[in-house]
Image (cartoon, rainbow, N blue to C red; front, top):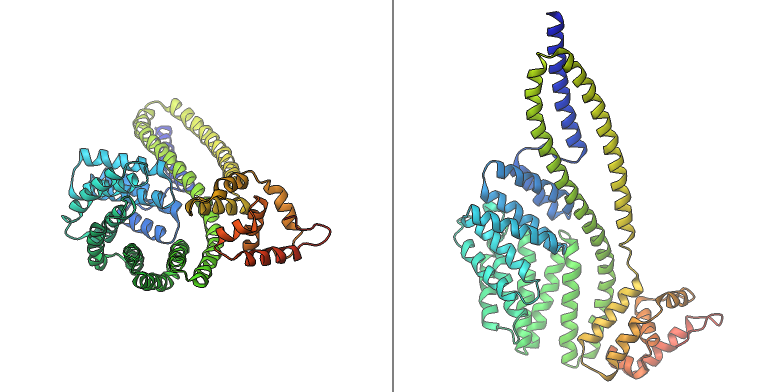
Length: 476
């Protein structure tokens, strides 16, 4: 009898230890101990605002599973919506498409106004980036607005209505030639009216920046350069106000504003102002290159973390299923004393084997991350070449454009990098000129391309020659 009581006690302790072990394994694998899906979702939104995409995705995955378990389809769809928008912001269209398909399935099985809004809104955004699918983007955009206007309190779900209206204005502006000005102005007006429903001051400012920017383009189309200039100057002032709370966003927005001002000054023949803003574009691009490299690293890390998290969730679900069968087995083991003893021994050995396998897996994952990070280095000269090619192809067609693009692509950048290492204080602008000369462009062609006088280009070339010594002279 004493032996039976002792075995029951040992089995109870063993089962409790197994439960603790599973909890420690879950914590070690990065699963969250918080079982409140609302709190997890709020934490995820905060992580997204702070640029912590990988952490946000982990919490949204767990919150989604908990909402499904509670059959709370509206909030489950919100988690899918926020995951999709985060993927869109980092350019991961493959994973965004997966979220669209899950939202579609949820909308078919458990239709509601909220689920419909999330499905149509995300799908509209996805199709806006798929070639020749703008008609689908607009159709889903209309459906999203119809659903949005049936939701009594969008702010309760952290929905920012302004973007649904702004996106429609953007579609009508960008994808129709000429732009459908009346439709654009209609949806911009509705977007302005809905700014008051934004979730945070940051949301309001970012929405206002986008709205005023698009309004400036409408004035430009109508050749009202003074009003367009005034509006874009206002955009730059708004960007300065949001710079502290959203530093990653303003680099791109500021660069686009500089390009716009350079363009309208060039069309008016105000060459000095146009050149000044073009220089600001180049300086801003240098900041953007650093941000792009950081973003690429974050995208790789986010994708890896999310895939790992999904695998861990699947593994945990499988382990929970096995745990239920284990409970039945424990009751049977009370009648089979000897078999129970050996099961405990085997369980300990299996746990040690799992820990060993987990250590090997963690080491392999670290090596994978290091390998992925090593592939994200960006050659600055290649970036400058891509920028020059894009500028050539987007400008007016000239006899030298096609030839120069081919020669830029064929440049030996390694040789040019060696040459640059022998120069003194070579700036980014210097590198642009050197690449143009290396691609065989004449002084007159460079002057036309850069919107300068040939005399200015001769001066630049003379200055470049002074930066190289006699041991390694400037060749162009």
